[in-house]
Length: 419
Image: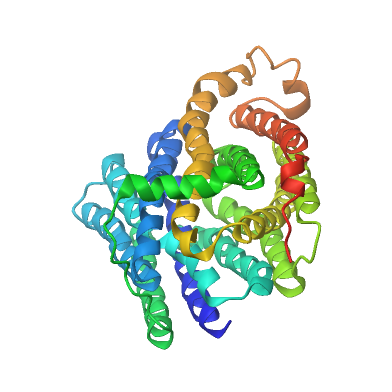
């Protein structure tokens, strides 16, 4: 657990920097273009290369030193941020440098994530998985809890370039932490057999498809990622019309308290049994509060609903993570996690690719004061800028509840045994 904690601290700090950049870029692009579609495109490109290349990153994690893969992924992903910073310093403040920079960053993150997930299995025993998952989520949640508030304050006094400099510096902290751990544990010898990409991908798919419980979990989590992708993309454009950048930053940070509380509960107490039941109930509650986020223009109500929405996510993620981890042999976990990341995160990709267009051209127009839903749904949730996005979140939340009921109760998922 000691070595895991060293890596965890490095990832915690790195995630704060990454979250600051993500928040600042969303605000920067929206204020530059006044288009939700452009925000969703930038968000899409920040994730799509990582998602598409994760299976290859997973194969490399199984063939080579997983800690070395993490170091390379962290260092090279910083190049995208450096590129954006240089362009801004030279006076290019348009969207194209942002698009190129986030794409470069995302490509190399594909080396990091599968190796990080497989490293958890390398360093810990099975009874430590749930607590470690809670800690991993605390680190991941730092980008939602701490980052927006810090970024919002910094943007009140400086521009986005300061945020990029801070983020670049955090990568070196992670690299140092992983380097220390790599020296203290046995290095995995590279496999000597011939590299066959399609063969190894096929082997990874075999472990996913062979176990029906894992197959259904992957399908369920793909739907969850799709619906959560709407929240990630639409929250800032929905709230900016009723609040300043600083207010929105603090709102996102306060809302993420729920994730931290849920993650701390899991990291301290763990989850002992009934993983499948907790998974389904958490997904249903998550959908309910997602829908409630979109029903109001009152900041306090939005924050309260967001806190409760985020509080359920650690339970969903931990249950799915542990149930898959105990079902897959350690020696193939790199490629399997890479493939699972591809399959589940495609839900986010579809959300990022569609929600901006839907918001700008369908939902926002119908919820304006003269829109077709102004006198019906508009009389309940309000009309004007951001209210179409609110309706989108309501619809997404309802669909999430339906999917949880239909897929979460599958016998194959309930049959997965966790010690």
